[in-house]
Amino acid sequence: MAVSQVLSQLGQGFGVAFAPMNLGFAALGAFFGTVVGLLPGLGPINGVAMLIPIAYAMNLPPETALILLAAVYVGAEYGGRIASILINVPGDAAAVMTTLDGYPLARQGMASVALSLSAWASFVGSLVAFFGIVALAPALAKWALAFGPAEYFVLMVFAFCCLTGLLGEDPVKGILATTIGLAISTVGVDANSGVYRFTFDVPHLADGIDFVVVVIGLFAITELLQMLERAVAGAAISVPPGDRKLFNLQELRFTWPTVMRSSLTGFGLGVLPGAGASVASAIAYANEKRIGERRGADAKFGQGDMRGLTAPESANNAAAIGSFIPMLTLGVPGSGTTAVMMGALTLYNITPGPVLFDAQPQLVWGLIASLAVANVILFIMNVPLVRVFASILAVPPWILMPGIVCVSFIGVYSINASTFDLLLMLGIGAVGYLLRKAGLPVAPLILGVVLGGMMEQNLRRALAISNGDVSILFSSPVTISFWVLAVAVFVLPALIRRWKAKRG
Image (tube, rainbow, N blue to C red):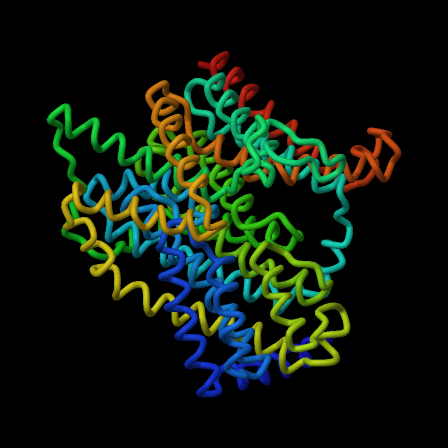
């Protein structure tokens, strides 16, 4: 597609996005998405799913409905960081990595700075992805087609190798935590054979353990138990609000390389169908942690490093925007949320795929342009509200934490309307408390839960295609490239440390 043609169609798209009704619904969706992302247990999938029947019942035009849903999606990615930073409870899976450095910054009295800096990182990540969509959509669609089950499995292996940077000072504990996460992901009925795995004759476990139940238990419930422990011990529980409300120029310069690297990483992974923002944020964080610790001894990842805050935020927003490419160009959902949005398209008798750009250019380019518009709206909305969000810290913890737990209970119950999920959440929270007391890191466990299911499914699909021949995992340039990267990520840091030790 010629540059002039792309620019012409993008101009038409902005004409659609700036229509008063579409602009109003974009602002409404951005606000609603931020609230959805803020509340633990909801996440972008639930937010989009809730609005689909409402949009259809209102007889909204297809482009307006899509603009509304896209704004909710991007807004939820923005909102997920708020609870992660302020109360150490991620709003969704993609925000898990934000807790690692966001919450320590809040504990240091830099909550407002962290909120404003993460908003900036989210803005840049979304903007990079927007330009990426405009410039590279056709080419990236062809690249995404090169990914089959074998390629996705090796991608997951690469993601786990990247986790070596998250294992902490005791790799054995990190590997144990990852193994526990992988074990949780195997609970339920095996999709291929129909065999019940690790259900212990409990019917409620047949569908597996929902990710929301795990993440709320490990963060909200565990945080409450730790708060109670500190209160009983007589320790002061305080998260100071801080004096400074915005990040400064020095902090912007310090984090800028991280933001750009992570934005490109997130966008590249977002283009891959099914990879998702959670994978992107994990890989981006691990990459920056490795770079930061290699370049200087002043790295404080896990203790309040601003690079550890901006990396996952720019990556998950870039991945969220990037996930629209496979949906629009291939008719394949790039994430769980875009899968739900494809359901909205079917309500309007619209079939996403390669012909969509030619059949309905106004719809496609209007949606692409609205992603940039919604991103600007969210940035303008989130920065002034930093003071409002930070004021949450003024609420006494003995009031705040029970309130968070109540919201968490509602979020978990809303998934399946099951009291068993509530009991399971409490049990996981108690186990998570014991794991933290034992010094096991939570991040590898969560990522084991997130990636385990996808990893197993793609491995079994690949072996089914090859009739059990494992050489399929090494048979394409993509798989070979990822195997090389995985080995390099795992081995090179140890070799570099050994080389430095010899020189020193």
